[in-house]
Length: 330
Ligand SMILES: NC(=O)c1ccc[n+]([C@@H]2O[C@H](COP(=O)([O-])OP(=O)(O)OC[C@H]3O[C@@H](n4cnc5c(N)ncnc54)[C@H](OP(=O)(O)O)[C@@H]3O)[C@@H](O)[C@H]2O)c1
Image: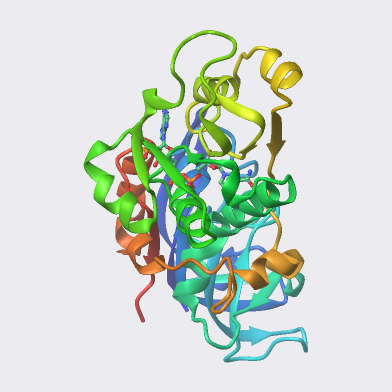
């Protein structure tokens, strides 16, 4: 059987992705073969496909860190043909071992989660790592005592996949959400998700002093770099910043004063957990849970597999709203 996959190659110091014909013998070993139905496009997937950075650490490799579909064969009794399953997260799939951008994937059984009753493959991948990471960040804010009465929560990179879910979830829990974005034209979208206010990227702070006007009780930051410094200097007393992204930069310089004079906390989030290890937060994201996104259909749109590489170029250039889900068709 022949099928299509996108593979990343390392050639003469360059990383190049190509759509290629494959057979199962080309894929990494594993007990379970899945026919792919949907795969997500995260920021790191776009970096991998376009050859930016070091997301992929083995060559050649099929990128893509999230897929959902149907089991076609299994050497592990825990799964049988026809089971609806998803593979997401962990440090191997789509980075050191063949991943999601393939019409068939093969993985160890231990990486696989089931699609629960009441959900489907699209929902699983649509939410995926983006919604799960935002849910973990929202949970951290709550655990650190940031309740809705404390004041506004700002979310950076507002129109991005993860941030869109953060806005949706925070608004659903009754927070006053302020979305920061570089895309003023997407104000209506951000308000539909639940943002009470939409500000530009330069609205995160009021000036350049080490301590600026106290604006935010909490923040979810997906961009890092200089905007993270602006946030820290503009937090209210005991404010909490949950940071999990690097779209604006991998490093930043800041002042000690927000920490020692306003007791501001900076909380890092690494949510790269495989589905079988996601626990309570993942359950709360399922239909009926308090962290279930209310605007999944507004946030996610499907693209055909053939358009994956072009879409990844656009995402890296910052020209994408929400979250793309690759459809493999029938
Ligand atoms: N730690 C973890 O476990 C974890 C898990 C998932 C994702 N992440 C990270 O979270 C970040 C977001 O991921 P994603 O998949 O949601 O990405 P995404 O869909 O591309 O969203 C990123 C958003 O950031 C904003 N942005 C892009 N370039 C920027 C720049 N140069 N300066 C300021 N803002 C910029 C854009 O929003 P606006 O145009 O609206 O401003 C963009 O939509 C990535 O860095 C990703 O690696 C980390």
